[in-house]
Amino acid sequence: MDDYTWRMRLAARRRRRQRERLFALALLVMAITAVFLYFSIYTKTPEYAMREMVAAYKEGDAETFRRHVDLDSITLQAYDDLTSDLFKYDTNLSDRERSLFENFYVLIRRQMCKGAVKVLNTYIDTREWTLPGEILKGRQLGIDYDLLLDRSLIRHTAFIDLEDVEHHGEEATATFSVVEEYSQVPFVLKVTLKNLANDGFNIGGSEAEIFGKKIKLPGFTFNLGGSDWKIVSVDNYRGYLDAVSPILRKNLADYIDATEEIVFRYNQTFRAAQDNFISMQKSPYGIMFANQRVEVSNYISNTIIPTLESRQAELDEIPVPEGAQFLANLRQESTRVTIMAWQSYITGITENSATALDTAESLHKQELVLDQRIEEIVHNSAIARNLPELP
Image (cartoon, rainbow, N blue to C red; front, side):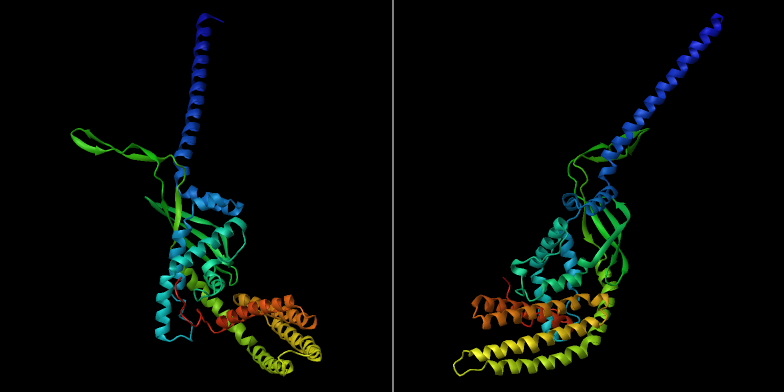
């Protein structure tokens, strides 16, 4: 090999190594840039926040889920949407009463929403639906909170997937596909997000003079505190209620019509049984004799409880539309609790057990609450009869 050829090969080898080094450097720069862009830009976008929230929801990561959802803001807006027609279908209210209750439920908005946040937080942590208790326990605010939750659709709305995210400066919108499980109505919920980040730095964005003209250079803001995008409202929640509620109300009305004859017939039977029960307990001394206790016990065991079981068996034979499942479940629970109350009463009078009688009384109170709830659903009642006082 002559000297010229040898020098040419060395030069070619040097150029090849330079290209390899430049290529490796370019790859390194691209990798560093991609990592920088990912952590400094993409992780600060609403798209990233929503995908992180969806993953957290599916994996049960409550802490991450809460970081991207402002439950306080969401429930306030949703409460207004939900209660806007809360009294519309209560045919027992006069116009004046309806106005009074509408104003009252504006006043108790804070307590109601605080309870909703507690319910949602418990569900996020445990995946179980509970009631808030405290001031919202029972009917202290004139409404059955369990029934309100059912009307909100939240307990039977299934999340499907994130559809799209659009960025609008300091705000963004995202859409989620969901389905209401009873009616199987699909819907696309639209939510608003706000960027609550306050720890960042800016690059660029300054003015420069070029050829005598002032030009503002583009600027970029980088948030150092992680993704601070949060859902603050569900924009079309009212639309979701309007799409689903009429279907559920029709399901409920069809079920009520289908069971009306059964309920009416057995109500007459129970009224007669109640009269017999009261008559059998009468005593000149106010205390039942031993033979009365046996007679009453037999009457409960052989007549009242079998009648309750027979009524429930007939109700169970009626097909239950999905929208009426809540009412059907309440009727089953009422029957179960009522039978348990009568069984405890039998134990109390036959064994002279004060504990069993106390249990019977407690179960009877539970039955009354369930029966009142059933009546409210059947008659489209939204509230209790008397306007409660604010706590």
